[in-house]
Amino acid sequence: MKVRLLGTAAGGGFPQWNCACAMCAACRTGAPEVPARSQDCLAVSPQGTDWYLVNASPDIRSQVVSAPCLAPGPGPRDTPLRGALLTDAELDHTLGLMLLREGGGLSVWAPPAVLHALGERFPIRDTVARYGDWHWEPAGVSLGGLTVSALGVSDKRPKYARGSTVDGPWVVAYRLADPATGGVLVYAPCLATWPPGFDELVDGASCVLLDGTFFSPREMTGTGTSTAAQHAMGHVPIDGPGGSLERIRAHAGSGTRWMYTHLNNTNPVLDRRSPEYRRVCEAGVEVPEDGTTLNL
Ligand code: MLT
Ligand code: MN
Ligand code: ZN
Figure (cartoon, rainbow, N blue to C red):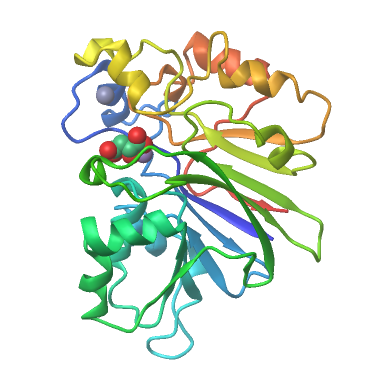
């Protein structure tokens, strides 16, 4: 299985357009230790010919244009992109579908609650239907030959669907396995907690891409957001008791590569000169840049 990390930042990207914090400012100066990051999503492919997005970020156009594996051809409108698998209905993971409307006939697979939200609450489905014949289906057990398992990880609805009474799960994590190579990727960019069943989902994985939105439970106070409001955003912090780093340590020696993605612009790990970045590295966890490729 081939994997390309198209983007590795949380919603808003890094730097965020309306953020004047020290890290966003350092990033704008082009400091090599503070690389810019676009909004989180992936491209995966069983053999390197047909490609599938996992989430579709608002940065999808530049992400596709800068990925050689996603270049169009040989026919004038041929594309190796077959569709997109969604973990949730958040805008940073779905707005990109609108921007792919020039491609007729793409498929979208998602949990039923997410398909519902994109049909009723935020009508992406109706909108792209006016441009081409897309297919919308509940996420199944196969993605172009990769074996897919999903674990429901929370019922957090996007703000635009807050009042929805549709049953979840609203957010899932995926395990993608390549039967040909034995390679396994787990993608979990939105984890409110380390949920029941997650240790089993990552068992034997070659690589786990994990929610790295926040380093600490209190890091948004500088932007006027309370600790309670940060907690309600539904992202387990990296650090502290119950944080993801502690749970990753319990898997030491398993041979799994761990990586953080979906980094928020407040996360000090974005700056490679920070003690927090060193802590993550010392724990053996990677913080890959946009454009990183994996062969699993
Ligand atoms: C999240 O990851 O919590 C959401 O994407 C937040 C948002 O962009 O509304
Ligand atoms: Mn997000
Ligand atoms: Zn900032």
